[in-house]
Length: 409
Image 1: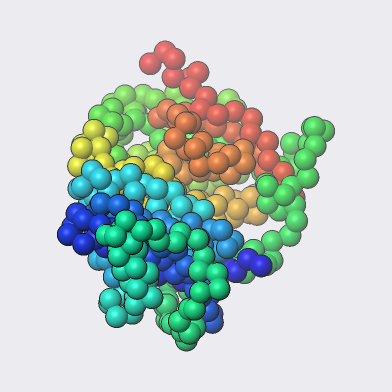
Image 2: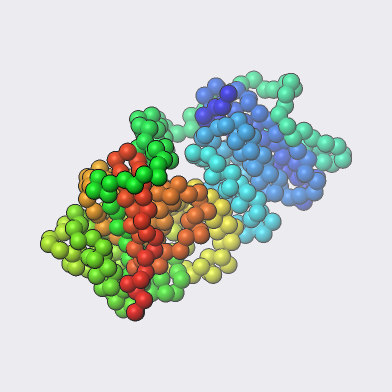
């Protein structure tokens, strides 16, 4: 029977650093403290940090096999915890593929929280790791599977992970409430499939517009929360885009924009080109991803300075850039924004002016695509995508990254 929440305790070490190495991992039921699985293995000659990452990977794999949805990962390795949280750079090339593998496993769960704990609170995993190191030193084998009938330490009492009203707990309660109240058919993944054309007049049409170019766009720099204005080329693109949107949508109920100036300037041009007086407002949920320490840096600079963190970020939408925001977090707020628009403007057309990451995430959801979609879809500055959403969850993507209006520029 699958368990929803588990605690993973992991450790690893070597006799000599590098030397005979091994790891240990324990999976406990988060509510009762009962041991659900153990993993340990002698891994030959390796460093402490390699063994610690191997222990984390083994624990996450065991939690996934148990069908867990949420994981509290606890280790006495400050380095692994800080690197997995994105706060420390992964400088050693030998650790980067292990961090990427761990990040990919993190993506298999609804939530993973990392916590450093003192060594005395990690005794069970430490004992398993030491047994594996002994086996490595003597050429023996350490078990890799569950402990089976072997004697196990008594179940520990439940440990408090976060205060009852902490932000993490609040988000978890909110997610659980949404899952419990979602009706069949309101989610694109569960909406009834059909080849029959739907009446467009009952759908909310979202015209998704990426802002025009900025200097950062042209220089291939990460551009998140920094308020970079449109370049001269970007302003020319915006004028062409406004004319194109006016031709696509003679009647528009509202123009809603990210609050950053490169979007609001694009939105004002569009609103001015539409017929009649169209309300224009901003929504903070449509802002670009926070790229943290990577803000303003070129793609090449980030690859050179944060290769391990970049690999981990590319491997999982739940991993954030150092001091930044994960795509999972961006998706949650963008979904909130678009759901609100569908509810507020049934059967009407709304122009949404945003950034490359939020628009990609909206299209990923609409097309029921996986995370690889985000790195395979290219969206041009000032490109236009159009989708229809019906109240029962039905979706029709009508165009993606239309740039015909930019051909003459």
